[in-house]
Length: 389
Image 1 (cartoon, rainbow, N blue to C red):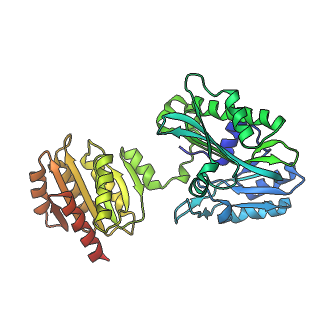
Image 2 (tube, rainbow, N blue to C red):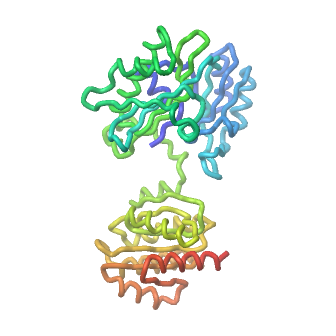
Image 3 (spheres, rainbow, N blue to C red):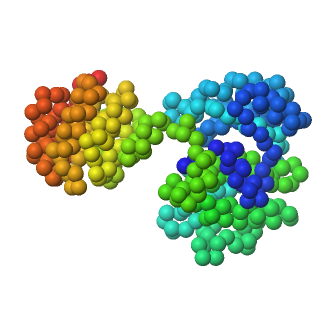
């Protein structure tokens, strides 16, 4: 689960990390009033969406007066911000954050995540703040400094001091950075986070450190331990199809291809997408309907897939272990009839009652083609998608 910037800053503040004064409003007049309260300017106004690269898309602006702040808010509230990370449909802007503009003489980066190779919480830092960590890793990987945290001892102040010296900080800045270092590590462990980034961590003209922007992701599987954090979720930032899939008990991720995928099992779904690509096609989604794929789930999955108007063919790849393939076949027929689609469907069934399931589909008289092997199914799907163009 992702947090908005203002929510992330509130969490940082609760752990004693330095953040600028800020206010948030859902109304343009509220932002204008907030600017008067934060005066004198200039101010920074930021659209609150679950996406990076907001500044390059116009979602962040420096304004000089409350009137300019109000005009910025009026422009964006109720509209969608499209960034290189948001996808072509963008994210709805429902809140604007405003804070005093800060003169930064240096911009640093500090973040925390799990290093999957070492299986340790790892603190990352860089002198190249202001850039995305992906850009730094791609162009100058040596600039990313990493410190593993031992889960038994937790973050140690000496580790923070060593990292501060490596970043060229001096005097009181070393102590300030160490407190930030220890604070984000404690926060990560205590709140069951999956990612925290402070970018930039500014060195102000007065020589102090200030967290100017923050991004926090929570581990969704650990939210049962943090009911207070569940309330911070903003479902408006998610694709409504994803929310419907979760409510129906399966996983769905939209992509940019034209072959819809309906598969039971995450690994099998990934393999199906790989084979589609290998055969020259492009998957329109990842969809794992789950091991206990019921008729109802299959019907709902079909409906969600077909909401994507770019889908030209649907590939169903089901292994009948827990579930019988003939029941899945009935679910497919029910979905096609209920939706009333003319999109061609290619089905590969394997396992429990696969032969009976194929017979059910072949005798339906609908635009459904069965295949025995996965490669054959992928090739047929790519061919049908091309014909449908």
